[in-house]
Length: 102
Image 1: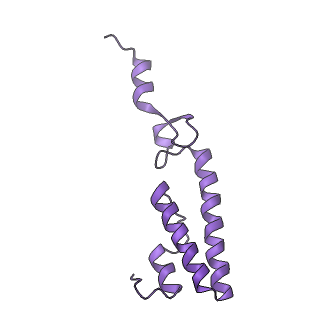
Image 2: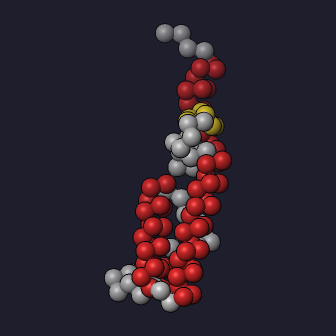
Image 3: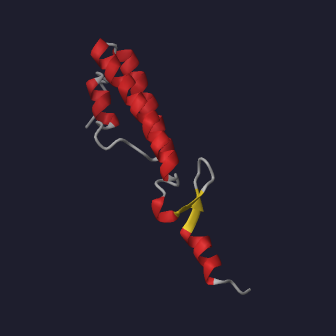
């Protein structure tokens, strides 16, 4: 089988985004997600983080715990987290989870 250099580069250098399927340079992918979709995921994760923050400000520990659960599922699913945000363990501890550990 004769394969051209271009075909080799396309086979190894570009991968489809796991969300939208767009071909992207492999070095631009984060957890298989293209930069455009990653920006949308970051917005979704930031929204979940704001839900946690609002619940904590209101003193609603149940809602805060629910937001932490959603954040944890999101992070596990997409392999992404907001670098400036506290970790799931830190949020669980702040929400009063007796089983939380740092």
